[in-house]
Image 1 (cartoon, rainbow, N blue to C red):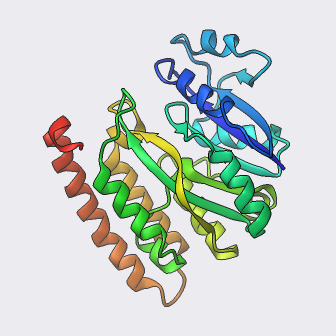
Image 2: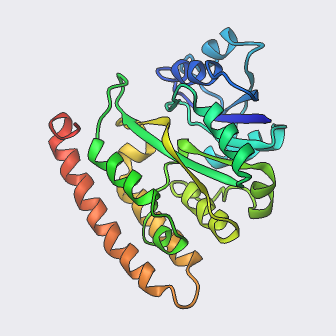
Length: 262
């Protein structure tokens, strides 16, 4: 089984080497293909990439944003299993072996694992949020997914044919493009749930999720409205309430700063 990991990158020199090392350090019964699609970084990212010449396929050119870079990477990729890992996130040790085993033995079309939240120094934070998402993903259904996005993007892997059937990422979505994709996947097939940690998501002030959580939450609500079918309006109404509760909770955590992160 060949697994293709695509990293969209733009000015993340502070973190991208940790991302690369977490991917290249994966071992198991699979073939790894790793691509970094950079949007023309000017902060030293290219110097880091040059150090990994030969182990990582990469290109650097102007693009239309994160979704465009990921779509480009998947068009270049040759693996039967795909995922993307942002340039400030990391894979857990043994993650790809667990994915290969799950999709090979279970014959699933996509799988979702657990994901830690870490800060700039790789310290685990927001454990309550992680616990909540783990609790929700174990009870997956499309209707519940319409209420809120509890799927952690760095810990999600899928077969190429599912990606092609569902279509690529919507380049017009700036924040909730992953949520939009999960809902399209969910209409085709239910994911297999991997009960172990596969990745770490980095929460910091420079990340889109960290700096623009209000905009991201509202865009997710719009995505839910777009995907809802007749008879699913109650789920959408619950998502609207969830949006306001989420913004309130993250606003409190933002005010608390480091005191509220653990």
